Amino acid sequence: MQSMALMAVIAAVAIALSLHALHAGWRHGDRTALAYAAALLCWVVLWGIQPAAEGGVSGSIGRTLTRVVYQASILSVTMFLLGAVHGWGGFRRALTLLQAALGVALALVQGAAPQHAWFWMNALLSASLLLWLAHTVWHHGSPLGWMALLVGVSGLGLMLTDLRLAGDGAITVSTSHYFYLVALFVLQQARTQSTDAPASAEQTPPVNPERQRLAQELHDGVGSHLASIISALDLDTPWQRATAASLNECMAELKLLVDGMDSQASLLSHLASLRYRMQPLLAAAGIELRWQIADEAVLESVRGDAALQFLRLAQEAMANVVRHSGASQVVLTCCQVEARQALMLEIADNGVGIPAGLRTVHPDRLGEDGNAGKGLRGMARRAQRLGGLLLIDAAHGQGTCIRLLTPLTAVASAAPAA
Image (cartoon, rainbow, N blue to C red; front, side):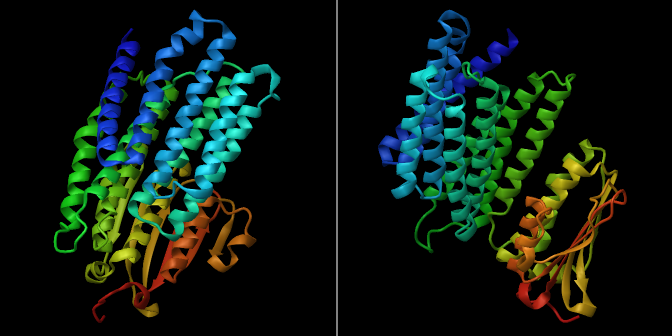
């Protein structure tokens, strides 16, 4: 009963947000806002028809209803994500509409279609659109674009899980859907902030106040909703504890994305944000954080994209420690290496390590190491953008050490003399 009441409250909030987005979309001709509203309404409809699909109507009709509505939600979310990066047009529009048409057709024909055809059609076309989104963000990246990509990757995982669990039956609403609605809301808020920014340089407000407003909305609005949802979970069950931990990690990543919106922030400032955001996650995992920062004047001189690349690399390394290391301690070190006139960032843990030994990951040889994970390849690409070298000391059973060495001349805008 409590669960149904919570779902009803969330549905009411989703309806209110969708109506607000519909009003803004019609008023300003904002198709992306309309797509966001449609995505929320599709979820509300799916939640509303779920009881009927499970018991009130025949199995085949319930299956068809939920699949048609779910296909509409896939279309709406895809339009919203592509619109957020100004990519709704041309080939992408045709592919998105083709996916929607095929999905509805396969949902209607039911038994006449090949087994699992609906699953594989959606999986392949959604993955193709996500790859295009990743390509666009990589080459023309902005904080909003990276946020849209994060939401897109999460959405693809959620969709594949939903379709796999449904099998040949009806699609059902799960707890993960609530969290994804929060992610869509955060992206819409960030997009609105970006759209409402004044065009002229004279009228453009400083970045810091904008970032602070967005962070405050995340904390006061989304944070309070998430706290309510987490408190309603039964944390005595392992999977719900894992869900709460994953949600907290996702929120930390989103907040770091907001922190990174300040394009003029220094590396020292970014590292302070990283420590503030990651400390609760590390503590919850039973991992002690040791912080070793030196040469603050040099770190303060590293700004712009260089500082942001350092932040993202450190963020990925710290997230891997939380997820995979099984460590009890992690040490982050950032300082100048005078002998090499380089800036060093190092994240070392005492966990299980990786059975790979000492390995030099260079972007020119990324394709040669098929065993390197996506995280390591992403770190190496960031090292390439910085003109640096990424070293990984990962002896099995002896922990992992990620070390980035970058020439000072490539990253410091005004590094003081040693």
